[in-house]
Image 1 (tube, rainbow, N blue to C red):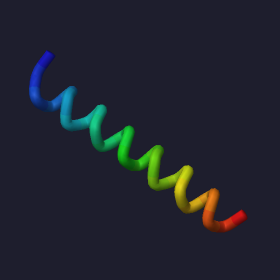
Image 2 (cartoon, rainbow, N blue to C red):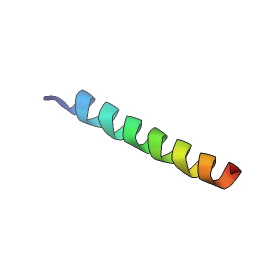
Image 3 (cartoon, rainbow, N blue to C red):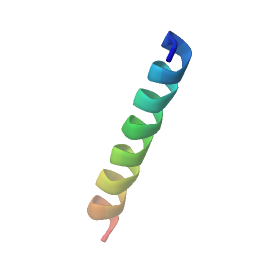
Length: 27
C-alpha cells in the first residue's frame, strides 16, 4: 500500500462525510 492509496481513501472518506453533512443540513 502506497501513499497514493492512503491519500485517495482519506479524500473519499472526507467527501462522503461532507455529502452526509450537506444532506442533513438540506433536509
